[in-house]
Length: 116
Image 1: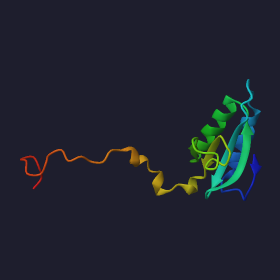
Image 2: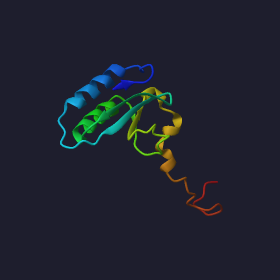
Image 3: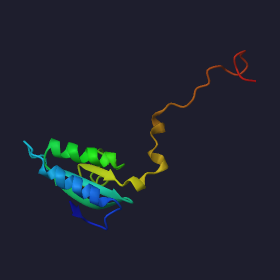
Image 4: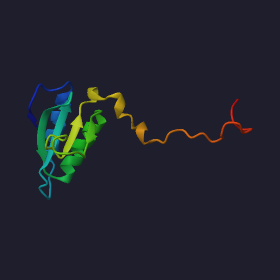
């Protein structure tokens, strides 16, 4: 994995997981670009070649609290196929509650079941 900026805390674990993933045999060369974000800046990137490598690496990063990003434009993704953001970068807006529907008033005002 190529470092582009100062490594974040706990980067040794990420580097070890990447090195171990690269050792796994692959049947097809996917050349999947993987990037690591810290404070919105791409701090490291690397290339994984196969499904086993990608799966191994992703599982270890998820366990470490890194958040995975798969979709977005090339600028948002820093020309990577997959991005992982540092666990310390978690924001309140990462709450998936936006997919929940707003509360609905079941009983119109003035009906016997409505609260006083």
